[in-house]
Length: 222
Image (cartoon, rainbow, N blue to C red; front, side):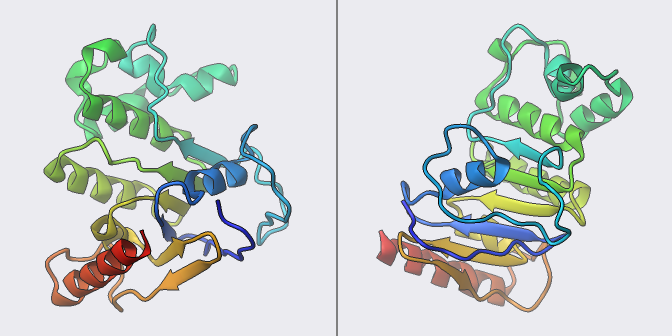
């Protein structure tokens, strides 16, 4: 677990958090989300506008956390139903089309592959439309092509949101991040990125060089 760190998530940008397994990346995400059982914490989590985070954060956890007795469509609008609101089914169906699940909207999670379940969880997160979005390895179960498609979709639909993305994939971080932070038990260290803005061309020489250097650094830190 990490000790004393100072981390700023720039408003309206993607911060990508990397580090070895067990260092506390998901714990940090849960602390920001205000989740119960996130662990012992001494410190302060503050917003630039001075307002509470409660009600302004959506979270996509490592586990898809789909309710097995609900359909894909029903899982997508779960947040609204839990709040006693009338769900926007038109928006939900549009999002399911975006993640390629229109033909599976009536299925329950047991009938889905792992990647399809993860895309359902992504649609549910996008459905919430919160200004702060916490994503814990949201594309890890997807094949390479679908992963790139969902990265592009998330970057487009979450434009101007404040994003914290926990990932083990240097290529994903370099492609999507406005800021990369490497978390260790001792520090949260910024990693220099190419000057071009995300979403970056994964084949551009400076992008490839940054990915390779970051991977080498992470391997050395293991």
